[in-house]
Amino acid sequence: MSRPPSPTPARWFKALRRTRLGDPCLKTYPLESVDLLRRARVAFQAGRTLKENFRLAQLEAVVQMLEEHECDFVDALGRDLHKPRFETVVSELILVKNEAVYAINNLKKWMQPQKVERNLSTTLDDCLVISEPLGVVLIIGTWCSPVQMCLVPLVGAIAAGNCAIISPSESTVHTTELLHRLIPSYLDNECFHAILAGLSDLPEVIELKFDHVFFTGNKEDGSKIALAAARTLTPVTLILGGKNPYVKARLVQALKCCLMEFYGSNPQESRSFGRIVNLEIFNRTRGILWRSGKVAVGGHVIEAEKYIAPTVLTDVAESDPVMQKEIFGPVLPILTVNNVDEAISFINKQEKPLCVYAYSTNGKVISRLMSETCSGSFCSNDCILQSVMVALPFGGVGASGMGSFHGRYSFDTFSHKKSCLLRSARFECVTYLRYPPFEERNLSLMTWASSLSQKSQGWCQIM
Image 1 (cartoon, rainbow, N blue to C red):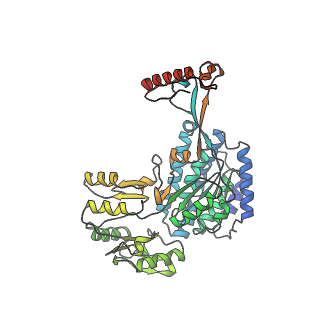
Image 2 (tube, helix red, strand yellow):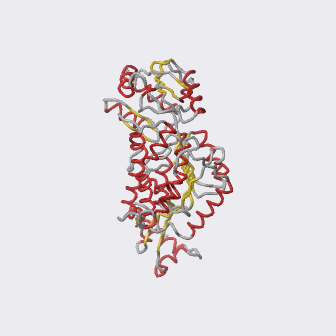
Image 3 (spheres, one colour):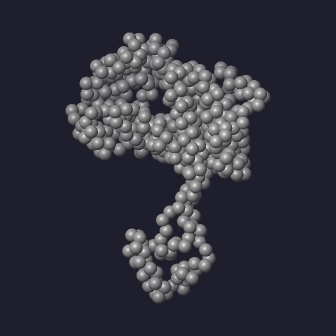
């Protein structure tokens, strides 16, 4: 498959001029959002995104953008989160590229109408489900994974044939500015836009009326997003955080050894250890840390650097702040249980988590934890991996969210499944039986036909 044409020298200059990090980047105000939404709506209604070739070109442009600006993304995430180059490339850039390449390779198959089972009355008809794009969608990212959580959903929106507006996190200033500058240089300028809006501004933006809102963040903000979307009956996908319970089993000493191996005796000096994104979240995390349990490992904080050492807490009570709020920091609380039954009971009496992680060499323990608890996803003897695989859906359940994404599931999230029945008028010689005036003879015939359908196909329907 051919790649999009290389940018002209003028376009290269434009991209270079627009991607200098540290330049002031103005906030997108509601009137500008109205204009961007209008432009995207006009482009969508003109059918600009419907062709397979257009979608493929945009997906290939996403890959090209990540490849040509890898150093810029590494620099931006380093400034925002002190994120090491290795982690940025592996957990942000490669992950998005995998999603885009997977979509490119499967798009033709995803776009094809799906045939469904027919019954006696539709034997001569075509029964299809067609995937139609929703329209103009809004994608709201998070600071935890600012590239991944903006661009992975965007890949799904593009593949499904939508126009999209992305709103990266205001907390990751440099990454957000970079996305804001690069999107117009690589993607179609009428169909795809990036806005700079704070969380407090987003309800006003959402009320402009999109066709779908995709949000990643915490439960409190997710509730506000859902409420704003409900006012205009806009469907939402919410990928929310939640408490992922752990239980103590000779962990503390092993964790000390691992932290020493990963970051050395002073994690502050390690190039592999990140920082909290801003002082607001730093102060909140520090407050939670100091009012919960007992520090068994770490606990060191430096406000000037927004640094919190990797910390393990023991003697934690269920009522402690660390168990009541999402942490968003390198703090691991440990609650002790006596057996697997207690662990399952503890998990099930909390709100449903985004994921349950089970670490054990006992297959029966893994099986019980997977089958006797409810969560958005489940992973044994690893973490995060299930949330980044293109072949697996990732999303929450209950308080941890609704809807899912990745691979085909992203395509489905941003598509409307339109049921279609294509019938010839010549079949009226049978269907006339259902029309008035209603007669017992016609009812008897239809009941008899239904019984035949039920015996031959296992279901009863004749219309």
